[in-house]
Image 1 (tube, rainbow, N blue to C red):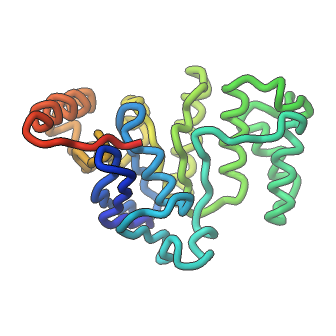
Image 2: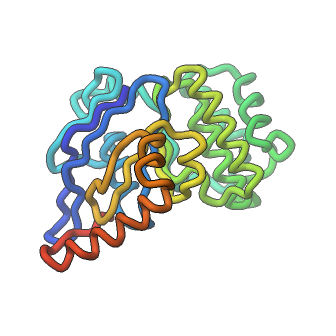
Length: 245
């Protein structure tokens, strides 16, 4: 389970994330949605412990983030871009992390096949396209079989086929009881795999609810996204609002 309570990060007067709260139950999928630069990645960095919040707390399966290192055992993370050495092959990258975690080599082959890189496994990273690098990063996140999976813009650079395969893999993870948190601005992905969604705008949570209720109340997630901009533009005339990073 993921529990986020009043998570806040203040950079300066105009750039801040404020009072983000939500809970994701075991085996459920939660989406952070918003336009580019609205604060999704900053929220994820605080949830994973990469960035220290100004205030608030995050609990991952009963372990408080930042208290000790126990929370790190609860999740696997796919950042929005993962820097691998260009001189390593895709196989060498995954094998390195597998050996760090005492994971059998067979799991490396299995994941390379799952993300369509098995035939390219001995090719150096400098020859990988953006989509291939993204699929390798996904394989890296799936390597440890962590109870919580946290993904920052996981479909960036993927073609339609691999977006489809990504959705299939996430549904399989849910069936296996994995708790998933991911960020995106692609509404169709949220509608197909997420149980809950939070819409973030200028560092604030505009709305957070089940995807089913959001669709029922607003007819579509596009309407929620549109309302987020129209409502914020009217309120910004009355008070100054910060923008997330």
